[in-house]
Length: 201
Image 1 (cartoon, rainbow, N blue to C red):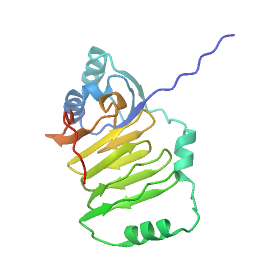
Image 2 (image 1 turned 30 degrees about the vertical axis):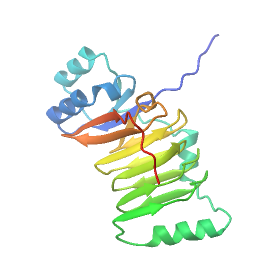
Image 3 (image 1 turned 135 degrees about the vertical axis):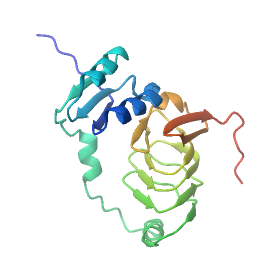
Image 4 (image 1 turned 180 degrees about the vertical axis):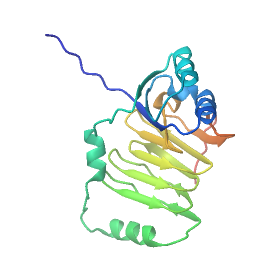
């Protein structure tokens, strides 16, 4: 017997409204064409025809197993209490902060949650996670995970990074280790390279 193991990208969708589903996938087709679509809900004949016409691969009402990465994210990591960690904890505990500027290396295992906008003047290591509900600018390379729900992000990411913008995974091939602006316009995610990179002071 011969077997093969594949790594695939999966987008999970809860199907509520037919027209909203089709509209969303039309606008974001380039992001989803290389994903497996996991649909929770009853799909209509119209949606089935649409998915087949677009040649999108999909499964319906199948509970997906958790990956090792998902399990690792859920683990409680207790780093050594350093000055850097204390400063980051104080920063996370501040409520209703509208704009944060931070010049700290975000190390592996660190989870940083920011309310409002964030300007980070350092890198994000593999295994670190930043979550923000505002806009995000990172001036150095991102190897870790980003979760952003603002109007835009500006960053450059390596192939190791995991970038989620408004619950949609941004394909790293669009980011290509150069500064990019990722924004949400009319419910569509647009990635634009910044041709002349900014020299940050």
